[in-house]
Amino acid sequence: MAVTDYTTLDRKYSKITPEIRRLADLCVSNGQIEPELYGRYQVNSGLRDLNGNGVLTGLTEISEIKAFEFDGNGAKTPIDGELCFRGYNVEELVSGFIDEERAGFEETTYLLIFGELPNKEELEAFRKLLSKYRTLPTGFVRDIIMKAPSDDMMNTLARSVLTLHAYDGNANDISIPNVLRQSLLLIAVFPMLAVYGYQAYRHYFGGDDLFIHTPKPQLSTAENLLQMLRKNGKYSTLEAKILDLSLVLHAEHGGGNNSTFTTHVVSSSGTDTYSSVAASLGSLKGPKHGGANIRVVQMFDDMKANIKDWADDEQVERYLRDLLNKKAFDKAGLIYGMGHAVYSLSDPRANIFKGFVEKLSAEKGRNDEYALYSSVARLAPKVIGEERRIYKGVSANVDFYSGFVYSMLDLPSELYTPLFAIARISGWSAHRIEELINAGKIIRPAYRSVSDRRAYVPLQRR
Image (cartoon, rainbow, N blue to C red; front, side, top):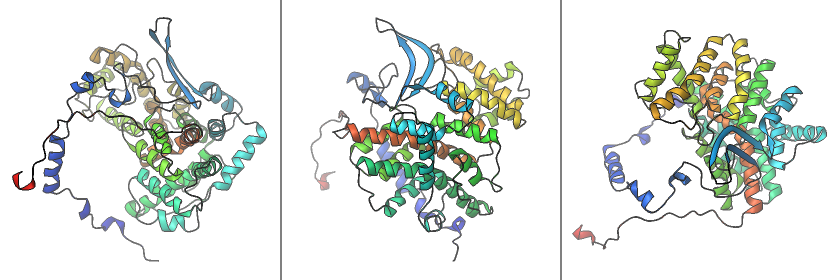
């Protein structure tokens, strides 16, 4: 079979010509809405009120995020963040499977989708069911993944998901049994689609050896990810445990996050499962949503290169102030990994992660880097409070640590966001099923027009 050299493909179609730039300027000049109009018409930009709180648009039983307590007068007080899956505190769920020395992602997926914790027999049957679905159609890797490989793994993942529609004899059936079947299939094959897509990319664009490891039925999702990705297929118990923990912590985070809300919106239209998941992947790909941990790692790389003594609080604090004042790294004025749209005092996922990150850094001989991360987590809230005059509470979020974890696991940065998707497909599936069970109307928010009326002008007079 002839192999196409994708590194020399003609990319003329992707060039931005002067004509396109001129037309783009026209779009911008005629497309800007005055910010004050949002206040005048009491429109919640970004579906957030003036205090930054999300506007209620639906109900869910799948998960709950709690960051404040309210008194009898409606005043709110920040508290340490809490995250619950189906009413169970995530910290307790994690303690349960960690203490019993077993993987937790499959159990968490069962809980999110079915609403109850499985017993031993149910969990084993569910693991076997996922293992049965952990296979791709004959020729799919060769014909779909290996052809036209992309340097963007999220697009590769979305393309593969949409293509699976063609292999499904009941692709458009949105009955709950069929949607459940499709959801379990996608949960099972997401790791394969992401890893194989990355292997194809590295082979054609990086000249690496091409190897395809099939998943092993006795291994967990996290273990299979590591053995499929690594040439020798080897991994340590601690590596698998921490990757499994990461999948659990990223599996679900309320119905209001952008990609899960996308799941609800698109599912309410009655579309098929593959289209719904592809839309959610498109949302998660955005750097304001799923790509934050990559920026954290890049920021720390710049920090390590520009701070002489990582243990010197004064030098670290000076760098953090430079970040906020747009003098360091990407000059965006942000300390990536600090702060969250909901949590203020603490992100429970970051708190859970922290102890395991310390253990992994010791195993990998990267204690100095962990100490630097700890210093930034300690100093950044003070610096942000002083520079931005924000005193409601700012803390490290889960992205602050997850990128560091992935780098210690020697996972390529191209797979950081796909790993988020491999976890979050469980939450998306649960929310899609919930939407189909309960919703009777298509989700259709209103937009107010603020354009002036104009009289039509014939072409020859324009």
